[in-house]
Length: 407
Image (tube, rainbow, N blue to C red):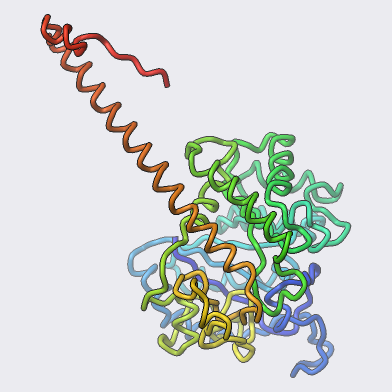
């Protein structure tokens, strides 16, 4: 499903204020130095004419309308659920002005606003009206980095609500950001698995739990993975990747993780001439992208509302990359929203691990193909026997006996 994101413009405060967040440079929790009145601090700035111009001309939106395809409309605004009334205003505006655009609504939240009944009631209303689904940003055993002593999965004010939202098919994703102070994928995997099975959520629509990592960028500062913590992260992630790769697609134990893990372990492609939407727009090779702000301006990242604060418009590698053996790999190239760290740690370790996974995947895939071929031969032999091929010469060759495979 294609997607389009809009980000609330203005000086907007976030209840999380994560220290490693890539949006902090543009969504500072202060009105000082901004062209905004104090009484307007915390309010979203709308320019509906500007937004309409984007909707009328954006190829992603217009193609969805022309083909009758469903478009995911993502709402971002510091902590998006703190601005839920603006979100409803936006989706109502789209529904009224673009009746031929089929869309579903999406919000990523840190979970704090779910302690308010009026917000939860609104979520259910929007789910019924626009198919709203939620992602929970939650750092597992390192949640203290995100919301300090408040854990939305276990706080009395939110825990039952989040379980119900999951069972009702509204909370469908969890995104954990691992970092230098939360470096164990296995510990986080165990944390989320315990929560899933304790609350009988293994067969729900919670089909994506990402054990993500913070960017190896200058803005993440001391939270960047490095040293012994990075070694542990890569070692444990490698084990989880291999287990997920050989698991069945339908295994409820691995289902929320498998797609993300397989995606991460198979990113061994070289950088070619193709550019992603953010890169092409940032470099000026396209005059549109897939995210804008509420003032009707295209922005370089869905997490950022100010187009003037692009830290790396040309998506340039760091000076150190020029002499690195891995510089040609696609994942070693940054997005517009990050300046790579001067001392590379994570990217080198990641590419080395991915190259090991390339060999692992080759071996596993060859074994799977060999088993499928053998099963095909056995089925053919069974079919021959059932068709009257139990002749003496076949039996003497050991080819006329029935075969059975224990699944």
